[in-house]
Structure formats: structure tokens, C-alpha cells
Amino acid sequence: MAQARPRRRQPAAAAAEAPQPEVTVYLSQSGQIETLPLEDYVSGVLAAEMPADFELEALKAQAVAARTFIVRRLLAGDHSGVPVPEADVSDTVSHQAYISQAVLERKWEHGGKSAELAKLRRAVLETRGVIMTYKGQPITASFFASSGGYTENSEDYWNMAVPYLRSVASPWELEITPNLAVSVSFSTSELLSKLGLDAAALPASQDLAASGKVKPVSSSSSALPAVVLSLTAGHRVKEISIGGTVFTGREVREKLGLRSSQFTWKRQGSEVLITTYGNGHGVGMSQWGANGMAKEGSTATQILKHYYSGVQFTQVSTLLKK
Image (cartoon, rainbow, N blue to C red; front, side, top):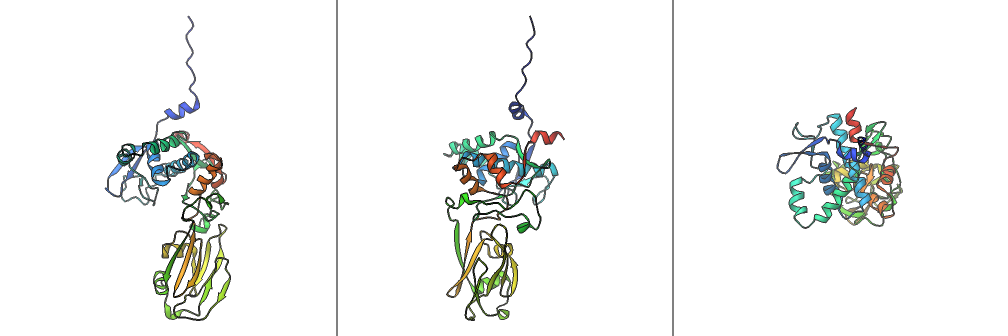
């Protein structure tokens, strides 16, 4: 009797059976370290970083981005920004937000959100082991909540040009993002304090518009003259002169605690009203944009190739063999 020839494993099955690297996460609330397999870590990031009611393809795109982020750190032995040297990453937005396995079990699995958790785990399973690479190396898979219609070139936020982090149109979130435009008002004295400016040195007032057009107004002690000097490729404020001092849009965003560096600024009585558009640094994938693309039928692969220019897709197990 002839011996049966062993069946060849399908590539997908082989990938599923490939050993996973372990991730050690510093849990900021308890100060403890959680060690767990890569794919379980990605599930915890997905639960923290993207609403479970997003489209499945958007969740899959986020899973690939999250997996790429941590694999890049693991391969580089990068422990930067972690309070303790024995952890690979923290559970905060300094790296990636993460919900521990214990909390997922207690508050999701047994807390009435089991269907949502199952959906997240499906997104992770259907992208298992997949990461984005550029010239054979895992990319810096940055992402943010929403844009005002365009993403940023990396050098306009981080002062470093990255070939796959290019400004692209992102119109999909404009109709579906809650609180796309948010206004906040500041008194002149509050603005001066936050920006580190001296009221005595201020020239006469001007109103600012995002277009960069300046409209002179009467001088007033309650006014703060400002004008946009330039915009980025992503339509955000690149440089702005406030009270005669030049700031980058990022500096203003961080000093004032704004949601994004895409903003308009105008005087309203004795206060300055700043309206921001979108939420986040604007570099890489827009999460609400990804959801909008998925709603229109785009796959996770199409979403990722749109937001990360010229990337390839690789299995983690392939990189680990090198």
C-alpha cells in the first residue's frame, strides 16, 4: 500500500502557526509589567485606539498599523519613553494606548461588550502577522484621530522627511467626524502667559485668518496681533507671527493645548476665539478617514496604501528569520 504523501500547509495556516514574539507592556496605572503574545497585545491596542463600532476594514487597518509600530520597536530594541528598562512599551499615547488583558476580560468579555471584543479580535485575526514595510524595514506607522481634509508631510510636524509619510487628501472624515471643528476662547492675558509673551512689547492689533490675509484693526490693550505667515502642504499653520514673535503651528498647538495645528484665530470682544479642525498631529493614517474609506467600500490594504505612500506588506515571521 502506497504511503500517503503529507499535505503541504497553506501559507495562511503556516503564518497562523508561526511563533509570536512577546511584548512587555508597562501599565502606567499600576506600575506593573504585562508580558503577552504580540497578537494579544495588538487586540489591547485596538480596543484602546479605535471605537469598536468602526467598520471592520478600518479596524483591520488600525490593527496592521498598531502591529507595525510595536514590531519596529522590538526589532530595533527600542525602549525609549518607557519608565522601566525591562518593558518594551508603555500603555499610554506616548507609544500606543493599550487596554490590559485583565481589563478586557473583566469589562469587555464579562461586562456586556463581548460582541465588540469579538469584532476587534476578528480584525486582528484577519490581519495576523501582517506589518507594513518600506525598503524591507517596518515603518513608523503613525496615526491620529481626524484631519481637516488633508494629512501632513512628516517634516512639517517632526522636522524629518519620511518618504512614506506624505501629505494626502483625506476628505472621508469631513461628514462623519463628530466635533470636527471645535472653538475655544482665551483672554489676551491668558494667551500671553501660555505663549510666553510680554504685553508691554506688543504692537498694534490685527485680526488673523487661516488664509493668511491680515485685516488691521484699532490698537487696544485687549488685542493680540497675529498673522499666519505660511501653511503646510496639509493646510495647517506652518508659521504664525503673534505679537511680533514667530511660532510654528505645532508650538502654538502645544502651548495652548489645541486639538490640532489647523486653526483659525479671531478677536471676539475682549477675547481671542480659536477654532481647530480635526484632532491630532496629522501625520500618517487618519482614523476617522479610514472609517470613511471603509464605509465607501475600501479594504484595509487600500486604506493603508493611501495613507502610507509606497509601503509593502510583510509577515512578522519573515522579518524575524533574518
